Length: 301
Image (cartoon, rainbow, N blue to C red):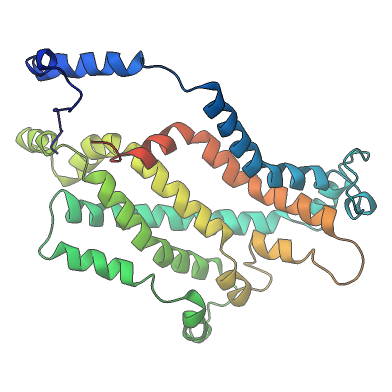
């Protein structure tokens, strides 16, 4: 990995300093730079509240009874209740959450298990014509999923795997693998080659190098990639609704069950959407430090 030490804003005195001292002085200068003005702070808060408003409205609606949730204009100050959440468990939401968690977690682990060695071969030890390989991975995302639904359905039906969580695991793994390879390649390209050569000189094999050297350095990238794959798997609806019925139905299918042409359903639908969103929010909150580092890794040289 090459690091650019020259900065057009450096003075002649700073350019004459050793690289390590130059980096320390540059970091001190960045740390003491002027903070953003009050206008930018207010603008950032306004944008944040704008994006958060639909989520807050969904949560508030889930705490109202159906009659108050359906009023126009909405009854913001209506009494709050938890009866909508109690109704979710009366309809046995637990199996749907377990199916979604199983398919999402297992497929994400399989994606990482396959994507990391592939990205290693395409970045740290590039294979011949690696750009063609990367284009092939990208080309698998060109086809709309709906166009592949019929042949996939026939294959799954002939294999006797309809309404099976294993089918969703295989599909989600193949769906997220190209994205994971592209992401992990950019992260692993930032790993210093000198560290890998030092590990090789110390007698570390491939597995030991990946576990003890590459994994700690690429941990932010692994967190970002795994969280994105988990979100894509958790939210997937098309294959789940067409390839499952009762045994392997996932959380998005549970949400659709609340939409009805008879009676009011908005409050219960918002309660179900809030409950289904919690695992993703918890995972994102738990990995937020590594997620921010991973999404910004490689953005600045």
